[in-house]
Image 1: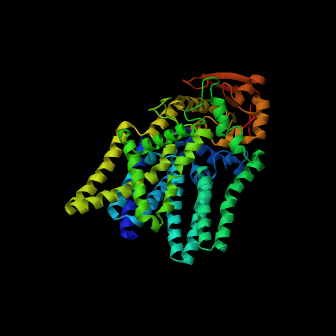
Image 2: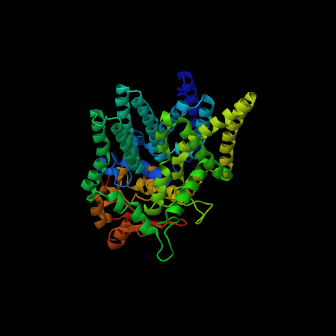
Image 3: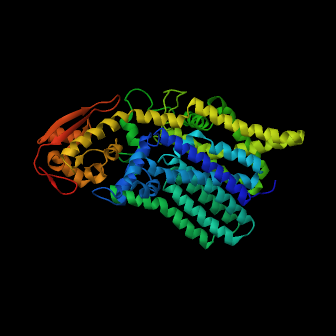
Length: 543
């Protein structure tokens, strides 16, 4: 097998097909109002917006738990209020990341595979309903999958350049790898492990070639190492703890402790059990990538395809593409010891939670299936040459059928999103309507509320974030909590939150005007201030 490269026309045709698929998914998601299904997607938009629309604008509004790059990419688009409110702000960065993933996967597959099996690999990846849905939202998975794929692409190309003694090409690729790893470090914590493994592998390869003194390598190393260090320093400076994202009040471990029920057993399946967590993650990846009856078949064929690729293309740097299998050990450990539960509808507790994590295995599955398809087509050609085209068409048809069956079953990532929004929908409809009615009586009136749970209420009300005093406003928020009626014209409290406790501690000057309830959600209460001279967001006093 000789290394191959697609022609420009072939490459553009493949990407054009992916663009068409992406646009169809975007149109479907827009029509069904699905862009804001995930609460996390809403929160990502909210964080990006508050960087410039708050009483304390600036990078400190990026928070400590979620990494900053996805929010920084959203900032230009959430500046348009309508795009922030309807979720369209996420379309450009997410869809472009998905398209870049498709381009990278096809480029990687064509390095070793003929056009037909490479197209089968791309089709399996691009027709996945779960990732197609997420590329219409503000979720971080499309961006991280893109970074994973291009890390693998450039690692493979760098290793080939090292073998060919092409020093100039090697230096350029080394910088590309460093930059995409920095992007991954600032996207998801998986990226920290990926960066560590990839960069150590590069160092070992250079050491074996006697090139470890390369100035480019050490300069790029400084950039890669600086990425997590900067995040640690940011946490220490802004939040007073360099590991605030690990042990702070909004960290995964803190959330797990708050939501666990004492005395009822493990908080989730796989807790402190690597074997169970491994099984759960692999099953999650299968369900995200294939129709339910075909999941185990997909796993077996993918493993066999990777083994075939290892023996066939190992000397042509395929070993570096095995980085795409990193999510398996990473999530097996994270579920067991990192407070990252995964719930699947087919196993106890028969629910949907973090099902999207399995999507990180999609590039590995797709590439491995491409090799398996290559083997099957080659065997058919050897047995009966005229059957090769029919076999290739059948394999491509199976990929399409898999997509259709998944759509009929209901893609688990999309279903989880619908379950997610069901719990918020009534509040996101009723409360903004009520807020608009009361703000008509007090134009520009400030709202005191905690936006961490229902941030989209602000956008749906049609007001800027700066017209609220919320938990991200620090000293303004603390002052308002000590005297709610004197700082806000309207107060929105949910039973048990900080605002609710402040209202009960300082009820003077507040009048309860409306109560909201929803299944499985804390009741909400709307108060108006009857205290004269309450400031508005424009500085005008509400009498």
